[in-house]
Image (cartoon, rainbow, N blue to C red; front, side, top):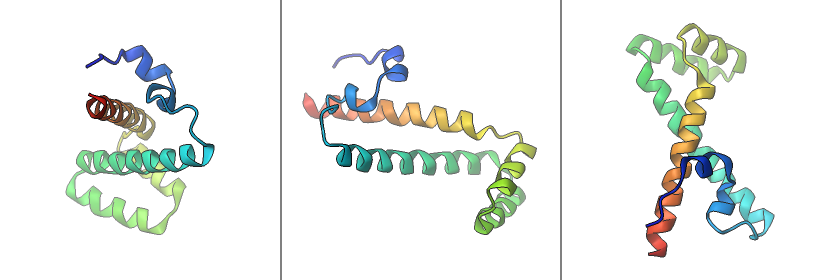
Length: 106
């Protein structure tokens, strides 16, 4: 198994790393949508883990309202950096996808 270098993981396009840079744009968009949905789900789980029970209930109510500013304000008051969580989860998912692809190729 080839070791994925951290620099490559961070700097290179996922499709390039997977050897899929020449697939049609429609397929790239479809795959990217699935990846983004996965990252978003993982970020929500991380936020859930960081919140106390009472805060979790309040956050759920705010999410149900769909008010992006209220969501951002709530998370800021809880010192939760969503950008950082999203970056971490995106890199983790990218790494997992690459490791799975390598295992399939072997």
